[in-house]
Image 1: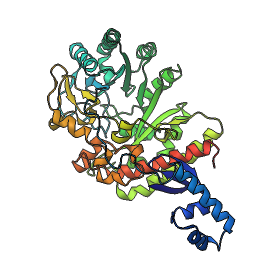
Image 2: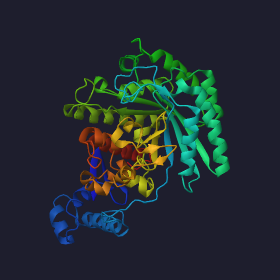
Image 3: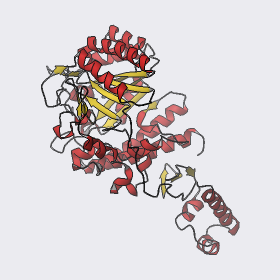
Image 4: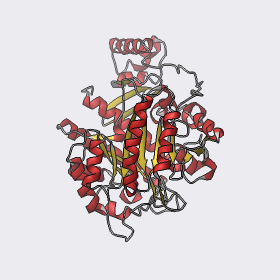
Length: 449
């Protein structure tokens, strides 16, 4: 399977099964459409525009790449893939608070409550979650916990206790914890900043972009904007050059289809590590995307690609999360097949200790897996998520981007199609555009075109 596309005059060919990327001229581009025809037929087809020598040279180059399994490579698994039935739990999304100090309009968590009462994680349940992860991580040495919410910093005291507890327990077990924090920034004061620095904790910091965009979607409970306060905290923290890193993480909606301007705004604030993602929302909301928005969104990704390329070529350091792609190897096999591992390698834990496949399933009782104190009780759900890989998804089998997106987000599939095996189509189309942009950026930066 090949994927061919042109970006700003550069002809790019992706060999899907090997991951090899080629920049080609017009002749090779055209030959690939009818390869493998006999040499005589190819010469007859193209002789009016190219010399016989040029055609033979192009065909020889293609033949060599085919022989080296870099073009028209067969699927090594021939559509058959069985995930490890003994996969271990690698990470937990630990909900430190089911409460929030903002009222973000697109919040999938219902302003932090996840459809239930507000509440804070107790140290006791948090310790049980840490014990659960260690006990269920098998021989894996490196394990992770992301403190999440709602707004986790509403429960900062318990978070501090759990980090100390987790590090001590991990050392006893011969493991190592990576703790991360996802926060809206309202409570990111100097004490919290120092805690993140001292504990080498990466942070995901929520900011949607320009003041009017951010404030419209991320107001306080009183209806006031939160932009000024959080940007002040974020700039202060990023200015301390946290060694563990950070991401400024935003969401764009139908209200700011020109989202590249929000990325540029964030760069102007001094933030170089940025992730801006499309909102996922039901059609009943005024900020959800519609099919008619797709051409605008795809062109906006093109515009963002050109801007980032120009800035990088001028020497700026810009890390845009969705344009990161490894053309030299890519992720490991299970990740290419199944993505994030939600539902069996990655689980979410509520303040009550209940286990769900990921944070976006929390509160959906049909997806309750068990509890950190009692363990997994619903193995059937685990098995369903484990089998939700690209070879079991009809829409993915012939998609050129399947090894990059790994079948898409499980939660989105359920939200839009009520089927783990049916990806969210609009999301697929935007993802494919992002991958094309990412590949083009790599090619240009490497000087290959």
